[in-house]
Image (cartoon, rainbow, N blue to C red; front, side):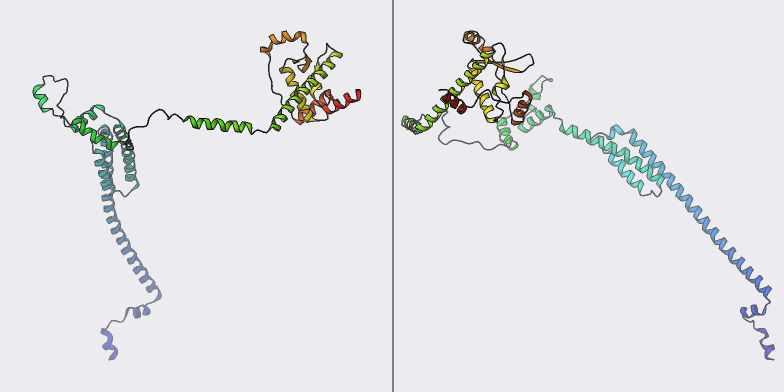
Length: 367
């Protein structure tokens, strides 16, 4: 009874599946999977249809933006000359229009058109700025004169009534016109205020020095001259006498060597070089220069372009005096390295100009 009473109730689905055979369960699972797959395909198709409608709207919107960009670029290129005018605002209006269009740009294709427009607009702006700078730096003398007359208060009404000439502009200036511009002009000149003398300007001539001061200066100079030590003067005189004596001694040596072979000049280096003393060599060159200065000896170049020296005979003095203007002076540079090279090259073993003290001893021995 109880079983028959429960026969009207439906058992759970899971219980029915368990009660089905395995083949029936597999078919039921396949049917459910097919139903779920069909439902998913239908939902995907619906989404695809919605996206197709949206893409169509976006394509139309992008096409419209590209068309407006092309139209804007064409307008800017056609009105380039008008936009270069400093008083025109067309370039600003075009930039504002481009900013409005850029708000709807969402793809690279439309962004490329915006970049192309910006290149054109920036070139126009650069050219406009350069022209504006040149206009600002140019000076219009006519406009400046007109502004200056206006500032001075020119009255052109009376001139138009009385003046019959229309070609020559004219006007009536008030009596204080130049005073007005003179008061205004110092504001634009950066210069220090002038210095006014309370007792007049300085005299151009300096004051005459007093005679008493001049006498004091002369007296002080005389004292300074008298204050020079007498011993210093004696030393200078003795040094000058020693130089003159040494020059005379070298001249006698030159004449003595030249008498042995009058036709052969003496080598300048053999005559002045002292192989034992570089200082004596410098002194010899110094003293020989006095001989050439006074016309007692002459230095010339031989066939090998080497300097030679020979004394001048007293009979040739007049001829040498006549050719004094043709003399040439040179500065000889000689250092120790060159001095040693000359000694080795010319094989100088003995000095022709003996030192003064050695010559004195020889003279004493001879006596």
